[in-house]
Length: 176
Ligand SMILES: Nc1ncnc2c1ncn2[C@@H]1O[C@H](COP(=O)(O)OP(=O)(O)O)[C@@H](O)[C@H]1O
Ligand SMILES: [Mg+2]
Image (cartoon, rainbow, N blue to C red):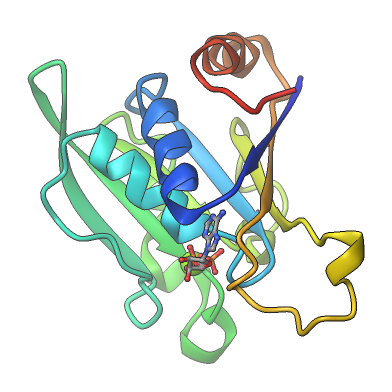
């Protein structure tokens, strides 16, 4: 199933992330892809807020993994926020311990730039793509993150995630 939403501000992207958090459960893995500045980290900050995390969300560029304590339905657990953008410069996947978190039922794992993972390591996941929407009239303008419009596309490949996307579609505006 594919669900496409438009976001017109970083606050809207956060709000969609926050709404989505209601449908995330421990053991879930979500991959966030798309251009730099597309809104992946912003979206994750919305998820963390929705899951009652008190810690600030920032790009784990140097550590590659940040862990945020969360709560859902009174039960504590953690979000693992991984950003693989700089993976080649730092170390390889096996060194950062990501495999200990993926599908570990104690965590929700959110991975930016997951395309840098070896194919096959991930079996069940939701993918979310972030793209800039460039207005035809503004096409010649310099293209920066200041451009507020983003297209957010959710792609599920099985019944487990399809059901969650159906619920998400009902809870947010600007979706097709
Ligand atoms: N609609 C939008 N959604 C998300 N971010 C937006 C939006 N409009 C502008 N921005 C800005 O774009 C940047 C997105 O950065 P970030 O979330 O770190 O992207 P990524 O993690 O994909 O590289 C932020 O500076 C944010 O304020
Ligand atoms: Mg980021």
